Image 1 (cartoon, rainbow, N blue to C red):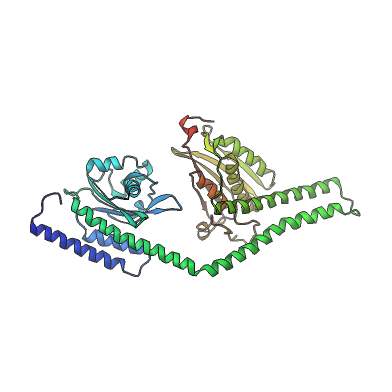
Image 2: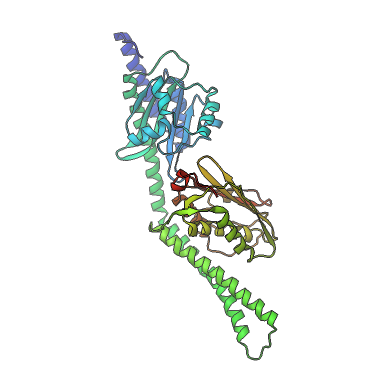
Length: 436
């Protein structure tokens, strides 16, 4: 590829390119779901495209805020699928941002990959089977018009050859074909959503009916106990009056939480969720919420396990309290038999992770996927009904993501649930290396 080809070599190269394009085009026309389609394309490229030894399609996952491998060849698939590149990270992020294909030789490959985060570098080394960097790379953006989807990365690791300028034009054509397939898949999904508009309308009506029912429940309790206290003929003892007032107070708190979740959800829908950052000492903030939540339950015991050097973060303290409160409230609701609720902290190089674990009924794997979607309610395996709006965790997710973090869950039915959220350490507090 780097030597001047003879006429015969040029004809052979063009014939090989035409054959590759024909095979890829036929593969992309197959009636397959996008993941299977892209896997079939990469398998075809592995068989017919020389001199590439490694290839991967990295697509931007807007929900996760990461580039994820969609299909690959030459890598150990189990390892490469663990990779998640941030915006601007490594060759993938740079070519995606620039929107221009790049041909890289040995020093340029090293420079472009220098900012790859250590976890991703370890994943890449395992997936390739060596810490050695490729000595030649072709990276092309996957785009249709102004719409960008990801990049196609081809690399040479051990063969004594390199990509050339003619390969750049050819691989960009391959990338354009792949981008068209991705775009077609997105358009088909949008069309499906449009066709399901009536079903969405019916679902919305059902959700509003459920929400109305959940709001009426605390109101009925408040009305019942307040009416009882106002009965002139009833002679309540001081203990009983105090008990009634505590129940009224608790249901007022439940009602306030539900209304706030609905209001915050509406703000999120119109892009009006406001984050007001200031230096935050997480241990102090967590203690305040734990003390508050402990007053709401006698069956549960909160335990904190926080590193003594937990750093100060730039965050909105009111909103972060709301996140912890919503998660802790879920932990209480989904462990009706009581038990420990453990709040832990972990310091990582770029962020801090807070986790809240319960010993409750747990969540099935199928329910973990839509857990943070609006109005979704986990089905209790015991049939135990949990009051709420189905908005607490979606609101928590929006707040965490507005801070630049992410939220996720791990659970096993019958063994409890752990919810995690991360907050970045970047900002003025991090720059000042303040700890507390």
